[in-house]
Length: 239
Image: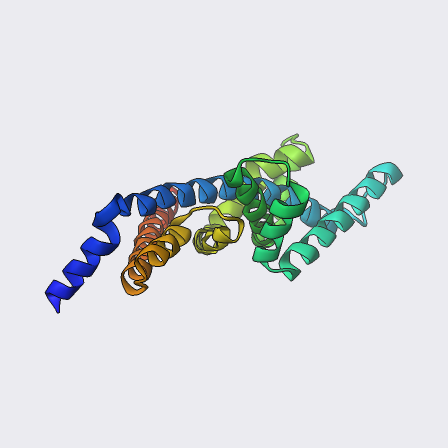
């Protein structure tokens, strides 16, 4: 049994240096995930601020132009959330690659934009829930110190909101990491596609798929541990 597994391991990964495909796929997956997370957080924070500002202040804004602009931005944000959360990420990825950015050569860029825009919709609702959980007295305290609404959001509200929703954001990051496994639909050679290529060359499915599963598992455990350490440090900083 052990000898059979050893021979299959050598056949799948050592012969032809096929293990290099997994290594290359590993770095491509990390690249896509990192870029997507940064883009998703940027989009999510902006959309969350627009949505929470509208919910909290739509009835009190006296400037008709400002009120109209905020109403339009909120409508756009709601449409974005509805469309992105209501359609599969695979379809969004294929639309981005085959229709919207068909002239772009970088598959990593296309995938990062697709996953980042998708993640931004979920991050937006996570951050918005964090903002709405902050006591309104915090807003009033910031304004009483002479801070503008924007300054109050950036310096007081957003940092507290992020601390409150960090575990949920971490889960979104882990989900995003695993969602990138569909990148093969646009012929991007990530970890999953690398495993599939090895399977197609060796006609052995067990070893490549187990290797892919183990790599994803190790990544998830590693990042979960990092997040738990960050959470612990944030809790200690409160004391």
